[in-house]
Length: 212
Image 1 (cartoon, helix red, strand yellow):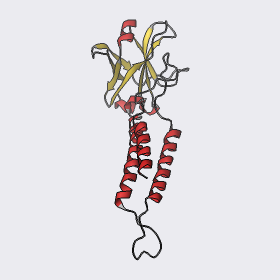
Image 2: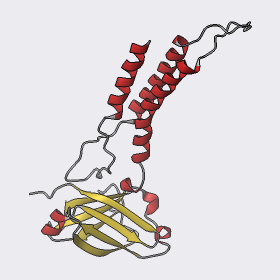
Image 3: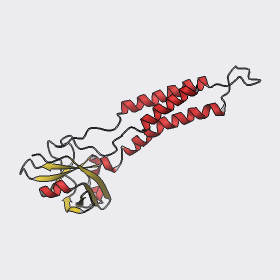
Image 4: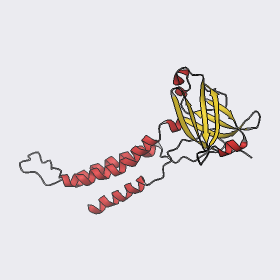
């Protein structure tokens, strides 16, 4: 029984150490795609079902001796037998809960990509909103502009500009977005950008690479 428990514990620790990607993913039209590092919902459900099956099996194996005076034949569970089961479930469930919690939030609401204009061929930053509901005047309490600030890897200011709000919806683009003009040097140096204004504050890592 102990060997089974430690085998399950080792397996769950491997799961807990898996390299999840908690960062936002670029839009479908990005010039630099990142591979998905997170687990799919199918795998999450499969692991949870497996955990429930393991719990059921361990409870069945850890049933104590029949209690005195217990006429229905149901065996009592000993606390010291249930504790390893609860610990195993906690170890299995914790990384899944952390992944689910971390996969949401503002990081996926904003996407910033290094881009080349399809009209002028000049470099630019493509700033997209991953949630359509955000792209409304009520998000900024009626404000007509938002501020885009980008910084380099060392925290130095690279770009500070204003964009009209709400963002435009263009044919051929998956998300509401804005084209931020910038020099090739600014586009390359920008590492992280923040979109701010009245009632809005989003931040994301700059993705992709310039073509050519």
